[in-house]
Length: 412
Image (cartoon, rainbow, N blue to C red):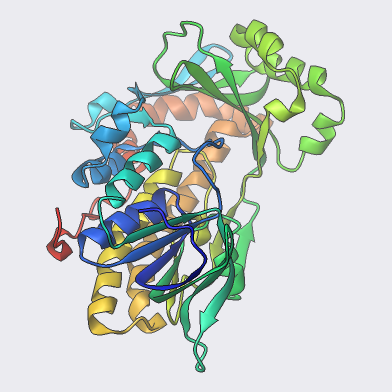
């Protein structure tokens, strides 16, 4: 049910942010008999998304929830693995087919398709309200300062009172700011990423590929329906200097890094607005909880796109938080002390991903001359040892102990 009428209401949970983390959590809570309101600032799903690579761990959880098949039917591409090449030489070939099936591949799943499927499943519950076009403007608190809901503006002002508010509203979280929760930002990466699309034009290579050669490293993968997602790395904070030289200079630099696609780059990049800049950094909220409030996904911890961990981490956050929230609802206790069980479970795994992403970035993307000399030998050694299988499983699955708490479900 979609409700955009002005006024006040009450739900067991108010989730701010209708992305993969927020809507996965909503579905879990609805199946457990809770009422849920989701506030989403965008008015529609007709917007540009970049994060769409789904790792096997996230795919398995979505499949368990009955979400994956429907989302895939809307359009997706399987990738058997990823390959790193340096001046035409293959340094690393990560074959996901070595992992146990059926989740032994990467999946390029447009985020819109995932969100459409999640919304459809959530919409089967009369206890679900979805309010697009609403921006959170205030946290509603009681006399003791405990968060009791959210006020929002947009398509008519609304107030949603709730047992607990969940901030799932991304790296620049408004809920986090309203709660006065500070973040520790780390410039742990030497690059930012300029994203754009090119026609696939029969490109038959199904792998996710990282090209190193003439110029900055470039990431390329097949995207639905018949396009290539391309991510050109550039020095961290260096976009302005590049952009000031104009689109023709940018096109020439990208073509230098990606010679096989030079003609397509020339033909299909017409203006700087065809490019989307991702400022690459990591950050972690100093606290993920407050009385009546919890943060998940990028609102709690922001990551680099390297290793395609964003959607995985968002879905895993939702799955881990779900039983914590249901226990708090049944116990009538949404204190920070109770909600901290989520932080205790997730923070070690999240920090492990952050540390590993920093190592991946240095190993695969660094332009340091020493790294360039060492990289081929190191890649060759690692790829031939059991350590590589361990690394691959970690990237693919994350925390292997995460499972959907189906014992809380009252609806299937």
